[in-house]
Image (cartoon, rainbow, N blue to C red; front, side):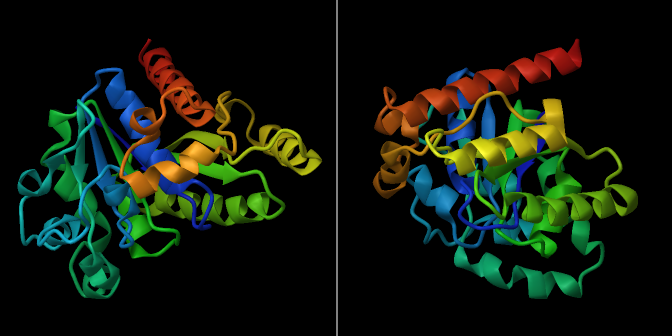
Length: 257
């Protein structure tokens, strides 16, 4: 049964979609059958793996019961990596979900239908703590939080941890923190070092050892519709995400031991 990991941070521009695309691609490169769920109406994970965002049916239609998830999932150019794409209709889903029964469990019920087909399922969440993100947190076994090394990082984390506490108490008591990932790190600056140290003091072993550096190739690869390991596997960004994938998989083995 596939483990579901929600990649979440309500702050935009922290490397959330970059992490969703590249971590899932690198885990797939280790020959684990992997599903990337693009649950952000912007659809950047879909285009980041080379898929046209104008598909007639996507995750929105599965969420509202208009299509089966297996009908919506597509292969990507990365072996072992599959995508459940997003589309613009998803932007209105939060309003449509409000009036539906069990609105917080829609994504969970949809993914349960395909969960056994994959080793890992990564969900790229929208940059908010709205109903779509709540659906992802209810569906997930764990959450991975990208944290940009900037001044307001810890302030946003406290809000997110409060939401996670509510989800645990009301809707998903098994939800755990997979880890916090330091992103866009420029170790030459004192600010980046200070924020990294602060995050490690607060969260200890929950912080991944791997850090993601600022890297121009990581910024370029989405415009080419390629994960970083296909765009430039020798780049620092690709090597960092390959190291993260190895660390992520090692954590799963340790947890199972």
